[in-house]
Structures are given as structure tokens and as C-alpha cells.
Length: 511
Image 1 (cartoon, rainbow, N blue to C red):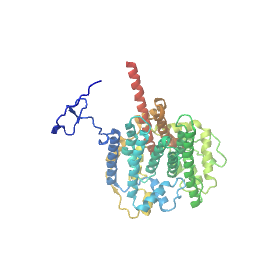
Image 2 (image 1 turned 120 degrees about the vertical axis):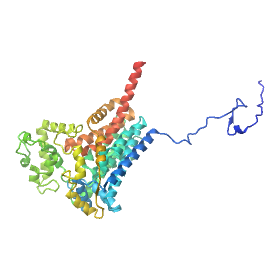
Image 3 (image 1 turned 90 degrees about the vertical axis):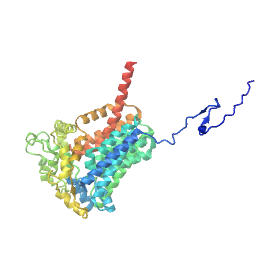
Image 4 (image 1 turned 135 degrees about the vertical axis):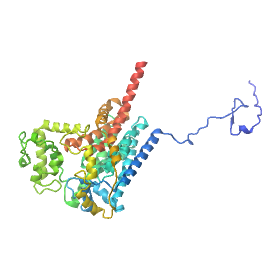
């Protein structure tokens, strides 16, 4: 039996206070490893990076407000939105009324245009946070979400659209909320899927083109786990039903208030503008009653007349049906436009694909000639200075702005040169666009699991936002800007997958 050895009594010195004695060496005081996690401030570099991005984005927005206030109102669409907020929400037959509703709500809070700009700048920063969180939930390094957050919080194009009385700022926020809720639905269940569908439906209230997002979200949720399962099918159905329900509410409200049917009345004008610049009636048979839409001059002698020229200015459709911003009195006017446009595409598929190709090239080089409308530089000039891009006046906007905001102080227009140079520096085109598109296409083969599913969601969203307008209406640089957030999100995830695979190959080769 082993003898028990008594521990000697050791005197306690002042220097030993706070120490713990080692039971194996009674006479040797020591400092134990104390758990300090609860006392230490977390040092998440990604969160610190996000805070810096948001801080710089806030400073840029404050500078913009000080230099140019209350808002940018050169674009003619601002006047149409103001008119909807002043008179009837359904006064524009070619647009949904969500943004005019947004203006009415803010007007009830404070009847000043500056409030609209401040709210839109806040929505932009919030959208950056939602993109960061959505990417973070897809796995991989936490810093990947900084890529889409930076293009939203710091991108010059985003700043200009937030500072303008246009629907894009609200649409980008709804888009970010839709994507975040869709990613959360993978763990959170039907309630997050319902929120994703609601955001997609409200996006249609704001912009008709968002109708494609309803299909994207429903299909992605259904196939998010690979093969459809009972749970993922339920998620897809929930999002689809909620989105369609919100659109149904809008359509019924519009019909009850104005007697008009559908989301819009003049929806066929967009496809007509896509087709008319190159359509040659000698190469297809116009449907009955549409011969007057044919143009006598062959396409080779028309030059690159834009889609906007055929919609809003002198064109066969304007002469036959009247201006595009009024409801035509000609019976079945939109049906005639739709049938004639579809017949042109069916009769001249190569000409249609050529026009789409010309517009698609402008995603890389916005100044390349095509049948589309504004390049990046033209869009900024139009936003700031109106239709002639140098006078600073837009009579339509000025009239309805005075009606909606009669007590606003005079407009202050300072030097926006630094902001224009910043916009050019942060523009997503050229080589950057090519790299990001290539990463979107390569991502499914570079990633696995949740990262792959999230990348597919962001990539498909970006591609739809980029190419759906080109296929159905024509190129406009303004239409490409909402795609930048999901495009950078997909690109960041794909780039991480590429780095991981290349690193693994290099290590295997060395081994």
C-alpha cells in the first residue's frame, strides 16, 4: 500500500495573489490558461471589412447629397412616376405602378423629394448587407460576400441610380431581399420561401421585367438539393403561389380602380421596339391587319435606329396606333403589335439573333453600335442633364415635380466630376464582365453542395437580368445595373472554387 505524502505548507506571498498552485508541485505557483472568449471582442475580418465598405459607401452618399440635391431628375421616366403619384397610379399604360406607390408613401411622411433620395441610399446600403449575408450562408470563406456588397455600396452606377427618382433603387433592394430569403429557405423552411416569393412579386409591382425572377426562384428552390424532393417541391410551390398571389392582388386592384386589365396595357411596345429596326416585310408575311406596320425603307438604309426611336418617335406603329405613352383607340392595337413582332422573329430568326448579338456585345463594350439605346456615358449624361444631355432641363419632369413637391427648395447642382470619374472607375464592363460571365458558366463544375447551389442561384439571376431585356426589349445600360450584385456574388463563389481546385492540384503534383 502506497504511503500518503502530506503536502507541505507553503507560505503565500503577495506576488502569489491571483495565482493557482499546481497540485503536482505544491510549492510552485503558476498562471493557468484562463478562458477569455466571453470577454474578448470577436475579430471577424469579414465583418470588419463589411463595416469599412458600408462606412465608405455612406460617405459617398453624403457627399452626393451635399453636391447635388434634392435628386437627379433628368430622365423622362421620373416625370411619369411623379405623375402617377400625383394623379392616378394607373396613368402610365406601359409601366407598373409600384414606384409611384413608393413615392406616395414617402410623400405622406414628408412631401420633399430629398426624403426619397435618402431612403433610396439607405436601401442601397441595406441591399449590400443582404448580399453579404446571402453569400455568407452559401459556405466558403466569410469574406466572399464582400464582393457583391462592395459593388452595391461603392459602385458608381448604383450611387447614380439611388440618387435619381427612378425605380431601380427599390428594385435592387427587393432583389437582394428575394435572394437572401431564398438562401435562408434552405434551412428556414416555407416561411422564408414565402418571403422570397413575396419579394419577387413586389419586384413585379415595381418593374414588369421582374416577372422572370418568379420562375427563377421557384425552379431553384425545387432543385436546390439536386433532384426534387418533397421538401424542396413544397418550398418551390410556396414561393410560386405567394408571388402569383401578390401579382393577382395588383391586377385586381388595377382593374377595380381603372377598369384596365393585366399588369400593363401597352406591354407589346417593348417587343415591337426590339423587332422593328431590322424587320423586313419582304422576308415574312405580316398577319392580317398589320401591313401598315411595315417600313418601306430596307434595313440596310435605316442605320442603327434604336428601339426607343421606334417606340417613342416617328415610326409606322406611331402613325398607325398613336403614341406609345397613350392607350390606343385602334381596336386590338396591342394584339396587332404582338402578332406582327412574333411573325418578324419567326420569319427572320437570323436577323433577330444578329440584333441580339449586337446588343450582347455591349455588355462588354457599352459604346459598340447596336439597335439598343443608352450606353453608360449616355445614361449618366441623360440622368444629370435631361434628354439633350447638356441643358439640365426636362420639361416633363419639371412640371410633375412641381405638382408633387411644390415646397421643395431650388435644385442645387454642384460639381459631380469626381463622382462621374468614380462611376467610370467602378463600372462593370470590358474584361471584368467577360471574367465574371466565364466564372458564372464554370461555377457548377467548380463547386459542390450548398456553395454550388448558391452560386447557381446568383448566376442564373444575373444572366436573366442581363439577357432577358436584350431578348425582349433591347439593350440599355440602365437595365444591366441590377445584375451587378448577383453577378459579383456568383463570381466570388466560383473564383473561390477555382482557387481551391488549383491549390489541390498543385499540392497533389508536389506530393
